[in-house]
Amino acid sequence: MNFEFSDDQNLLRDQAQGFLQRNCPIEAVRAVLEGDQAHDTKLWKGIVEMGWTATTIPENYGGIGLGHLELCVLAEELGRCLAPTPFSSSLYLATEVLLMCADDRQKQHWLPKLAEGVAIGTFALAEGAKPPSKNNIETRVQNGKISGCKIPVPDGEVADFAVVLAKDEAGHSLYLVELKDQGVTRRTVKSVDPSRSYAELSFASSPAEPLGKLGDGFSITDQLLNRAAILFAFEQVGGAQASLEMARQYTLERYAFGRPIASFQAIKHKLADMYIALTLAHSNCYYGAWALSNNAAELPLAAATARVSATEAFQLCAKENIQSHGGMGFTWEFNCHLYYRRAKATSLNLGSLNRWKELLVSHLLDSNNVSKTL
Figure 1 (cartoon, rainbow, N blue to C red):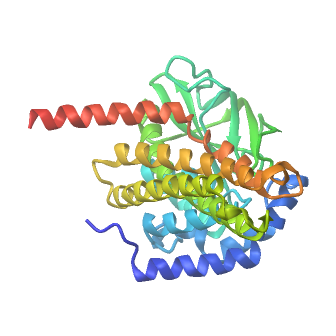
Figure 2: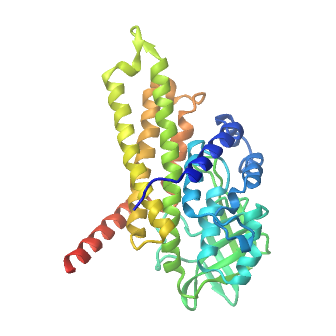
Figure 3: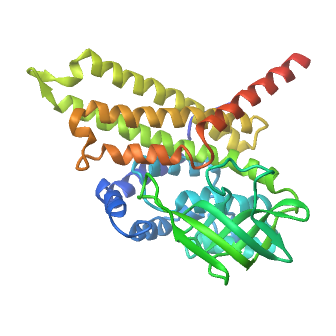
C-alpha cells in the first residue's frame, strides 16, 4: 500500500501551484468577496483551458481520463489559494454523480460540456438548516415535474444544471434539472464566505429527468458524499497549510521587545499545534485518496476520518493564524479572515462536523464488530 504521489502527480502539483500563483493571488479572492461576481470568471476560464475540468472524465466523453489522485492534487492547490470558482460543485459533486449513475445518453450529453467548461453543475440536497433525512425531504417529483425548494445550493447561482434529491413514488430518487428551464427561480444566499456562491433554488413544476435507479436516492447520495468528502478534505488541508505559512511568516517578521515574536513560547505553542493538526489531516487525506482511487471497501471510514481531521485542522489553523497576527489579524485589511471564512464555509458543505464525527464512530464500531467475528 503506497500513500505517496507519483512523480507525474507531483509534477502536476508544481504546474498547478505555478498557474495559481500567477492567476489567483489573494487580491483576486478579495475582489470576488467584496464585489458582485459569483466567481472569478477569468480564473475559471484559465482552469478550463488547463484541462482541469476534464480530469476524471473518460476520454470517450471528452475528458482526459486521469484518476482521483490527480483530482486530489488539484483540490489541495485550489484550497491553498482559496480559489473563488465553482470547481468543487461541478467536479466533486455533479461530475462525480454523473459518472456514478447516469446512463450513456446522459453522459454523452453532459460530460463533454463539463469537460469543456461550457456547463457548470451542482448538487442540491439541503432544504434549510435541518440535516437531510428520509423524513424531512419536501421536494417532490410527480409525472416528471419537480416542485420544492433547496437551500443552500453551492454555486446554484451560476450552475447550468443541478442533480436534486427528491421524493417520488419509489421513495427518494435523484433527478437532473436544467436550471434555465421554466419554473426554476434562483435567489442568492448570503453566507460567511462571499468568495463562494450559494443560492436558493425553487422549483415550480419544472421538468426533471431521473438519474440512476429510482428509489436509490439516499444510497447514491451517501456514496457521493463519501467521495466528495475526501476531495473537500484536500481543499481544507491546502487552506490549513496556507494559514500556517502565513502565521509563520508574520511571526518571524514581527518584532517585539527586540526579537521576533516567533521566539516567544506562546507563539511557538500555537504554531506547533497547527503543524500537528495539519500533519494528522494530511496523513488521513492520503489514506482517503488511496481508498477513493481504488474504490476500496474502507472508503466510508477513510472519508469520515479525512473529513473530520481536515475540518478540525483548517478551523484551528485559520483561527490561530488570526491570533498569531494579534490585534491586526482581526482587521478587514489583513487577509487572515479570508481563510477563517473559507474554513467555516467548507466545514458545512457536506454536513456538519458533528455529523461526520457520528459517521466516523459508527464506521469504527462496525469495523471493530467485523474484526471480532473473524
